[in-house]
Length: 179
Image (tube, rainbow, N blue to C red):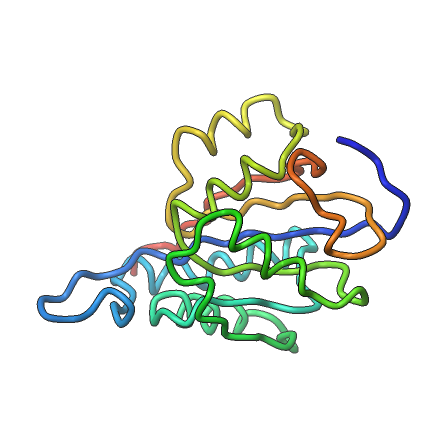
């Protein structure tokens, strides 16, 4: 990781939970599947247990991402502010990074809820290294639904987050239990 002056910041990347594919429903409006309805709260618990609660969440406007956010954040005492941003829907890594660069300097932990392949590419673009030798290979192989990647870096503001400057500190895929 390239160390820069400034606050320790974390970008928490959450891929939406498993979605359904109902006939005739536009992609943007697809709901969560039963597994997604179980996994999204598990993601919320994992973020709380890992001390990764954000100061701000940026969420795609797609139904499956919004529902993932709602179910995950419902697991916390007081959810942080959330901004729904249509630019996150089907965005590629450069567009995602542009949105992250707009975040206020006062936010130290940012949660980004969105979609693949953009999120996977963003993690691989930003992570210069990882704490776990196999974590980056896991992301390269698959960044499944409900996956959470935590990237840490130091910088004066979010505009200073550049390719290769973050450390992938955690990668998990929380799963809810079947009833």
